[in-house]
Amino acid sequence: MLISLYDYVPICVNLVTVKLTYESTHMNPAKQTVTSKDVAKLAGVSQSTVSRVFVPGSSVSEKTKQKVFEAAKALNYRPNAFARSLTTNESKLIGLVFPDADYPIHMKTLQLISSELQKQGYSAVLIPWQVDDEDNHSIPNIFQYRVDGVIAASATFNKSLYEECEEFNIPIVQYARVVEGTKSSYVISDNYEAGQQAAQLLHERGVKNAVYLTGEVPTFTNDERQSGFSSEFEDLTGKTPRIIEASYDYASSLDKVRAMLADKNRPEAVFCATDNLAMAVMDIARIECGLSIPQDLQVIGFDNIPQTEWLSYQLTTFRQDFRRLARECVKIIVDQINTQNRSLVKMMVPVKLIVRKTTK
Image 1: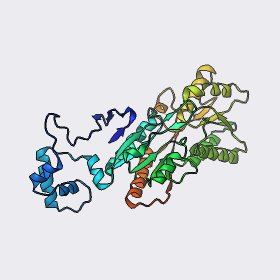
Image 2 (image 1 turned 90 degrees about the horizontal axis):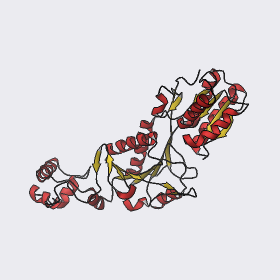
Image 3 (image 1 turned 60 degrees about the vertical axis):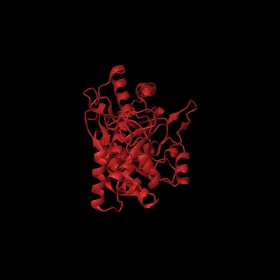
Image 4 (image 1 turned 180 degrees about the vertical axis):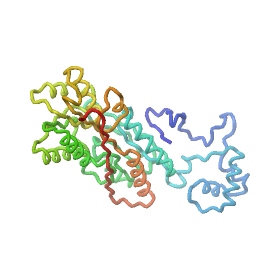
């Protein structure tokens, strides 16, 4: 289950609208709410026994469990997760701190992590974050929601979130991103290797003049990709690829892309930090510059978003293993919650090069 705190309103989860509520059942409000006390009376057990039955791993006999389950079914009883958290001191909630949920990759990631958490008996709470006019990032006080752990997926957060998690002894794992200088585990794609593979492909295609087109905000993962590309390309060709900063956003990158393609030293190939950038390069190259891809210009992206398969793009790009990233991330956070072991885990997951029609 994925619970959103945006404006504190109900959201759709797996195509089902849910509401944050302290009611233990979806019964008609006119009817009296069934409580664990009612179930205990019908089952002939104590109220505390009913509570233990609905806590995974509790030491309750199968015979007693069956009696309680039958009574609960007869009364249409649903355990109150919020009340149970007060007893167990566990909310079974994991805070997900993600930027730009509208980006296709982020939406897919949220679904994957939420699904993996459900398998482990946890629910995900989507934590909104905003950027103000001075480019400062703000995150609501997530600790008031008694989250058992935090999964963060932005390289642009300041360190305060990580410091607060450490102060409150709440484990935090970084997903596909690394904020340097923080004491937290992370699971990321092998960006350095991706950069190397891009350089090798372009070398095999005869490229001598290449550009790495990146965004304006430096990040650990992007720096690794850039470093792998630059180092490998120079080793293979004896040439140093140029680094040009644009924007990770399609529309905001267009002017820098125009300038790059209008330069008398126009590159033979461009390796882009994101697929959005790569599509911007393709559109300007073909529509405004009259260039043919890949004959005049070869382009490589990164992320393998759905649009890269469209007939108008057929973009060569890299696919990150988001399913494995999600699985490993959840495995680490659940293990750290259960064992109180805060040892740092640093894991890199291989990427896959998808060769389409924008390279020769």
